[in-house]
Length: 129
Image (cartoon, rainbow, N blue to C red):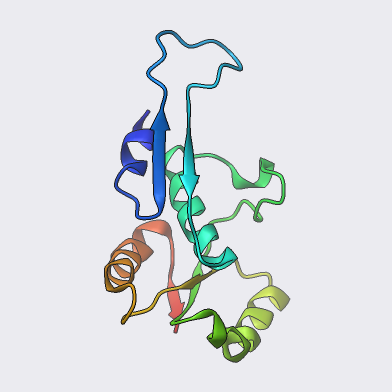
């Protein structure tokens, strides 16, 4: 439940709790919708949610390596990705866990502040911007 409560404070994550009493295996109790403008942004929000419940991402279909990212690659817009691609390619080559996100200081300043403040706590040691 801590993940559900914390998810309510994550931008772009909307919690829909059904308020059902009792819980049994396989019963749908609610869901969380995530809205994003890119896969990178989706990965960032999804990673935050998964960390809240200590879920191993490697067991998810199409999941990440299961290792927490050490490097954050951030850019102001999707159009910056070709410029940042060389950094992403090097991280892949050396098997360094990373995340890519769109974090615009102009369009989404609150997200930038949130990303920056949460980076170290999520294990990010380097930010490439």
